[in-house]
Image (cartoon, rainbow over all chains, first blue to last red; front, side, top):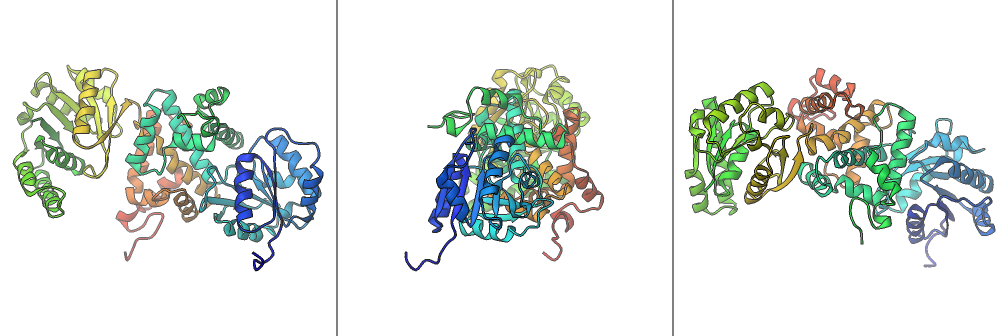
Length: 257
Length: 283
């Protein structure tokens, strides 16, 4: 592919569920891409190879969905290693972009983005700039995400942005209905697909996103709004404690083979 | 052949009558208003002709369906029905009054079902001497097209009654789901956040209605929440939200949004008024 124009180097660091799919999409578009996966445990320093990648990266993505402390550590390390003008996209599902930018020396380079698994071609991605950012990086972030096939929309910065709020609220309500014995999980999903033309049932959706992430998003929203509207169904917490997180652990509301 | 009595010849009643007729049932369609009966009869005739013209229904079948339909302005004619499906408007006192009368008229083995989307089945059963034979049979609009039927089990509804209605829905080509009698049943409850969360987003200035709709459509939904509210009617959607909110004793998850009330106050009801979240004038 010698005729392909030069594409900037991309560095992706964070949870495998996001990092691997995003890495594959950037590679397919011809970007030299480095991926470092880490889950709950964050290394105290970036490995030398990743450090080197960071110094020459044209775009960096941090994709730890939660919790905030490791995310803050990781953002700090990336901010210190990246060239000051390199845009830093941070996965903002449980924190706002403003919060992330407050952890850096260069708030102007931070762009928050929200996307939920499954990450597929044409999936919607939301972008938001921090309240005290200058949006310099937004245009570049948008161009990159559109080039790898996402449908990009810009929203105002708020915890959970738009779609994670709508989806998690739907999943939560369906989980309350299961907990209260209103109907069987399959029947609830069937009802929503046939009665109101949803493309998937909310409980199936919860299994695909991961119920641990759903609870983390709901808790972040409840923490931000403190109005009871995002109180997670106790059944969701019980399922997380039991390791029934959905597709990624083989069982959630459904069995996944 | 099952004898089905349908009470109320409005949009839902006539739709359910058409479903029953085209699946072999004998139907007595009752309404207090002769005009409603006449228009329902004409509507069912149109559907039968359209189905026959499209080859969805053999001409002989359509003819037999026609012969099985009886329009009646006398409730007493429902005495021999095996199943009654009530589809009058959503008013508990009106429905309870009707259930009392039906209980007196219908034979003791008949099932009395309600197509209510928001009222308590338990409260309807309680005014009869046969609460075990009272259940919900909630069809979706348009009934001839939508496959879902929520079969609602009231506090006193028997297993036998639930099974009979599940079987009936299957014989009529529907997909039944069994639901415990709780506010909004499944669909009208679980769909609340789809609208309410979208309204909160707009209210907080996170995104505007077209942006939310584009995002939601990108997930595979046929319509975004604002387009769908415009289609359903903002007044109808608000009424459901308010009813579920009250029925759950003001649970914060279901709190309706002031923006929607304001739109209704302005007469922006959606497509039917020419303007809602979007403008439909000149379309």
